[in-house]
Length: 490
Image 1 (cartoon, rainbow, N blue to C red):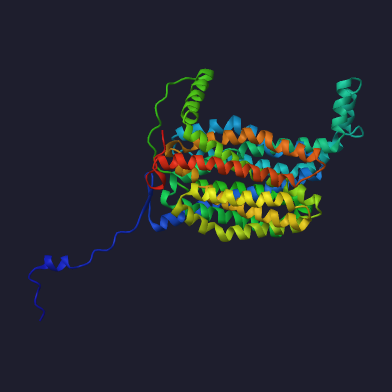
Image 2: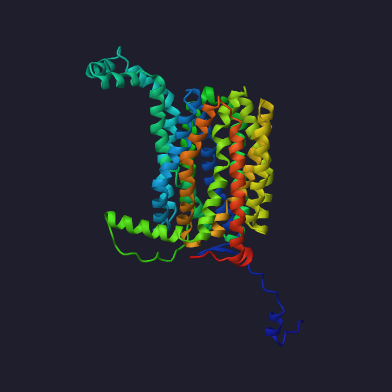
């Protein structure tokens, strides 16, 4: 017979309590391991959609414009200057509206949901441009009933003759059709990096940002490898079909991510006086300038970010015409780009861990130094197809290292509750420079008889300037507490 325990309370005290589950928090959102994995999965689905668009639409648009044999000056204006000018007008407005918005779906997702279908429509339109341009050219011909009426109305005046000459030029019609859909596409995607970065800033726990962005980069790189290894060589024969599929896939997957990710609750925005119309716009602009551009520390961050982002543009924008000028075929071009992404993929999560351990600013400085060395060397030796491909792969690897390291820098340097606003302010500097840079490089290439090797020289020089600026930022960053005690100045 078992003797009852005379003191059951003492007995229960010896029983081990189950260990509390580890949790992570971001704002008012608290995650267990399971919910954190689910969050990462949904965000990575959205990233896969975004990366599919980023890795394919730009290169395919560049190929199409290059196939039309337009001047490099116009090429640079369409590919970089126009998006930069668009961002200059809309970026700050959308960013401030997002920071201050409070709604049932949060402050970032409503904007992302609005833009996704418009972007998809723009991508599909770019894909259909060759068909539309050919159809318009045929319809506007004098032999067609519509074209005959148009010719009858416009004939007899100098302006009418000029207009008819333009309408009969199939290349001009194609560029105009492309420009309309490219504008729609850029309008819908221009603020997404800021808004998506703001969403990640709001929902991902800060101690995991570096590793999350490492995964983010890995997904984008896998996407790029798939496209460039297996699909880039098919662009000349399947341009329309590929872009239509990409446009539909992007829209569905990105909106799916938006419906699944939940934002937390936010404190109410700072009260602002109710002003409408031009007076309200002027008040918002003054506040934006005062908050973002009167602190010398943030100005130095913006200038560093501008030069660092610019240094990759010369090679990125003109890589395809550079390769074609040396006789590199599209299939080999795509496979070498896939190799670049494969090498970068091997580094991505490890770099994310290093970013969390040593701080993104330090890792950015190392990446810029390596990139400057590679591109300045490339400017001397990339004169043959093989030498170009080696320099280009190294350019891609070290620019990829930079993008992985810099991904969480804004979240670590800017005020948390105004992240989108400050990120948009940093992009204003970049947009102003982008309006000028690509056309200037395009004009220089044309003026020097297609010396594309100058793209490496421009890139290396800009990387060196970015590195100098980074040293100034680092000194101020350390005075503000450094990696352990940093507090973003308000």
